[in-house]
Image 1 (cartoon, one colour):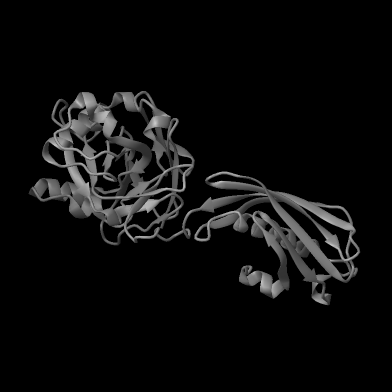
Image 2 (cartoon, rainbow, N blue to C red):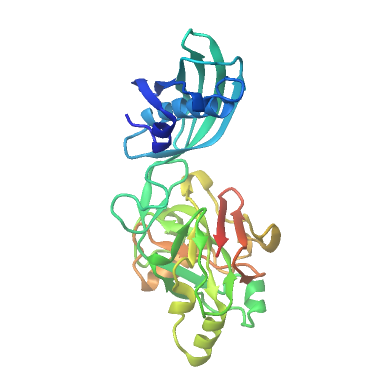
Length: 351
C-alpha cells in the first residue's frame, strides 16, 4: 500500500501490512532531530499517526476513506539515530468510526512512544458523491447511501410559524419542490446567492421514503418511511415575497444551490415514533428556533397521505415537513447548528 504524500516527504515507508495491522519504518535524518539531536516529538507522532492510520485503511474496503479525529501520544524515551519502527493495529471498527493503538521502537527495540486514537470512516471520498454520481443521503452508522429522487417540501405546518408569516390556520398543507441540486451535506458551506436579498433559516424534520406508493392511506403511511433526518429549508425571503405577490412560483426562492441542507438519516425502525421530538436551531450559539414535532398541524402520516394523493412517492424521495417559529436571516460568517431529539444534528457554515 502507498501512504499519503506527506509520508513520502517525511520518509516513512510500510514494511508489513495485514488486515488491520501495519508496521512502518523511518530512517532518521538530521532534519528529523531537534536541537539536542533527539528525534522531534512531532516526527514521532507523525510516524505513529501513519502506522495507526495505515492499519485503519487496511481494515476497510478499498473505496472507503478515513481521517484522524483524535490521537494521544505518550512519550517513553528518546531516539537519537538509526531507524524508527511504528506498529499500528485496529482495536475496534464500526460503520463510521475506528479505534486504533500502537507503539514505536528504535532500531535496538527500545520503546520510544505509544499512541491511541480514533478515525472517522466514509464509504466514499468526502466532498464527493458516491458511485452513480447523483444526489444522495447517507444512513447513519451504515455504509449505505440512498439515491435521492424528489425533494418535496411542506409550508405552514406549525401554527406559530403560520402566525408569524401572517397566514390563517386550518388550510391544507402547502406543497412545493426543491431540485436535488439544492442538497447540502453535514459540514458543508452554504454560499449565499448574490443579489437575492436576505436568506432565512428554517429547521425541519425530514422524512425519507423507503417503500414507493401512491394514494397511500394515512393509517399505513409510516410503513413507507425509510428514515428521518434534520434538514434546513433555506429561503430567499424577499424573492419569495415578491413571487407570492405576483402569483409566480417559488422555484428560485426555495431551490437555489445549497438550499436544502440535510443530516445523515436515522432508520425509522431505530427511531420509532417521530412525534414529540424537540427541534432546535442555533446561529453562532444563539438559539433562534425551538419547537416540538408534536406541534405540527399535519402529522408525518397525514403529509404522506396528502402528498401521495397527487404525486407518486418513490424510494429516496425526501419530505421536508415544515418549520416552527423563529425563522430569520443569516449572513456570511455565520455557523448554523440544527438538531432534533433522538435523530441528530446538522451543522453548516455560511459564506
